[in-house]
Image (cartoon, rainbow, N blue to C red):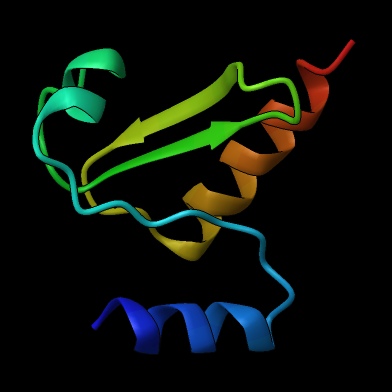
Length: 71
């Protein structure tokens, strides 16, 4: 499944990372539910998050917010 998602996102020129986690990442990011969407900047800092299903409009707002938080 991850391969299909990666292929789809590659076609959109979206840079992402998809994890299947043993719990360590979930704890580090303090994930309280699934699905969870995080925007991580080039320095590894979380710039935005959305818990729950995300629509196209919500994703665009999330990315916009992340860009606004850049130094």
